[in-house]
Every structure is written in C-alpha cells, then in structure tokens.
Picture 1 (cartoon, rainbow, N blue to C red):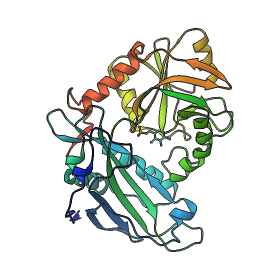
Picture 2: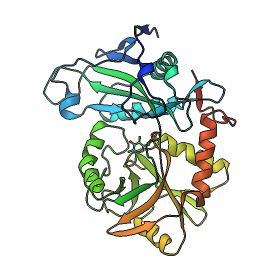
Picture 3: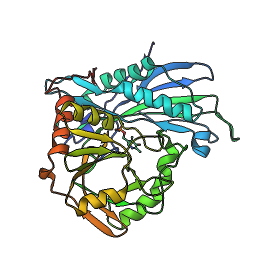
Picture 4: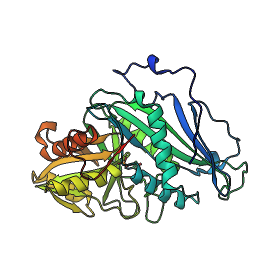
Length: 350
Ligand SMILES: *Cc1c(COP(=O)(O)O)cnc(C)c1O
C-alpha cells in the first residue's frame, strides 16, 4: 500500500502543555484518510489534521451509519514508540462494519495506517507516567443520498490525541434500573456510534446525582450485570475474578481480553459467566466482595469506589487493599512501557 504523505508546514506541538492535557481535546499534527469508492479502498493519505468537508445528506449524520475504534500508543522506558494490539482493533472494526453493512478493511491498511500515522507524530506520545497517545480510527458513510439504504461510499479516518488518565480518581457508579444500553440481537457487541448517543441522557441524569458512570444491566430481565460506560466490568468475590460473558450485548474489550489472559498467567482464579446484580449485593453483604473494576482503553483499569442500586450503596475497599486489580494494572503497565517481557507480542513496534 502506497500512502501519500503531506506533512504540516508548522507543527502545533510547542503549543501543548504536556503536564496538563485534557482528555480528547488536543489533536496531533496529522491524520490518516482512505476512501471507499463502492468497490475498493482508494487514495490512502496522511495529511495535516483539519476539518473534513462532507455532504449534509450523508447517512452517517442522519441514520448513524458510523463506527469507531480506540487504542493507544505508549512510550517504552527506552524511548521506543509502541502500539498496543492494533490487530485486535482491526478484527473488531470489521465485526462492527459487518453489522452496519459497511465495507471490510484489510489488516495491512488498518494497521499500517495507524503505524505510519504514529510514526510521523511520535513526538506527540507523552513521556509522563500514566500518559499515552490515544488513537481514534473511525469509518462513516459518505453517499449523498437521504433515503435509507446502506451507503456505497465510505471514508475511514484516523487521528490521535495525547492523553492522561480518563478518570482522575476512583469511580462511583449507579446501576441503571430503567434505561438499557443494549438488548439481545441488537448492536451491543459492535462499536457503533448510535449506541453511545442512546446512553447520553441516562448518563447525564446520573451525573446530576453525583455519579461518574452508569452500570448497565441486561436489556431483557434487568437482572444481569453487563458493563459500565465504555468499560467492561470485573468483580472479585472471595478470591475469584468474575466478568460477565460476552454473548452479543456486551462490547468485548481488548483490555478485558488482555486482563483475562494475564489473570490466567498470574494464576488468578477466573470465571467468565453471567453475574446477577443480586449476587454482587449478596457477596457484599457477606463481606465477600473484595474488588470491582472496569477495563477499557481510555481508563485502562479503573477501580470502582462504590456501586449504587435502587438507592442502596455498596462501598468498596480502599484502592491499596485490592491486590488483584493493582497487580493486573501494574502488569499491564509494565508490558506497555517495556519493563517486562511482552509474552503475547502485544506491543507493535513503530
Ligand atoms: C470500547 C468499549 C469498551 C472497552 O474496549 P477496549 O477495547 O478495552 O477499549 C467496553 N465497553 C464499551 C461499550 C466500549 O465502547
């Protein structure tokens, strides 16, 4: 694949205060673009980050034919730039694309697009602990047609943002006992734009009540724990790590998958199964709920401080008294900064 490269004539990097970066509001110098002409992906290019020009009739704007991904590049302690598991994001992007009748991408274009973009803007990867370069690939429909049918043409874009940590402290979540995020045979497993729009009003209400995030229950019985915000969930009951099984309504996180693999290596007892919110409460009441945390690219591992369901609040142990999430978080961090062996070949070299 031949990527045309047009470099910016004036980098904006000196304008950025790398000690104080708001999440998702600072954009690196360049972006990657490739267009689907109805048959092939054509004209891959890297150009200065700027506004896009599109028809007001594209179905991405009207009917949500739009999908995205999220991953990060890290700086090893020796200075090398590395990207965490881009192949896994490529697979998931194609799953999302299939669900919305959008074209598949080949692995080389997706991964090489990310790699070249990060290579060009590698000075934007912060060095500070806990910081990284967030990478946002996305695809949207571009046909100029206001009727409802899958578009024939599409655009795929990648931009990047230097970021610090997503949550500044521990997270207080409210169990959503009315609205749901996903339902059986819907689009919960896919990273499609509309899923997030639908969650914004319930989240806004929860924020007004002082919570950081919502915990979603299953859309059929409102009984089983699904996920929280853009994080998958893990609970530690006694000495067993439990995460809900992903059977169509849960977005299968790459951080979730990584945590499961590491837990196995670290010989932590693990179960992937349905878990009812009542079971979490019962464990809490018996003093068996030792830890609860969310996993996702933005937040990495975010310990839950409290979980509130129908007005009843479970207060979880202090951060330092949670050996399992601390160990998993540390191990993941060590891999991402080249401090420990990368046994799974997760860190793609730029
Ligand atoms: C992206 C996302 C996650 C986490 O996935 P990662 O690959 O770990 O970043 C979890 N839940 C939802 C709803 C998401 O959109």
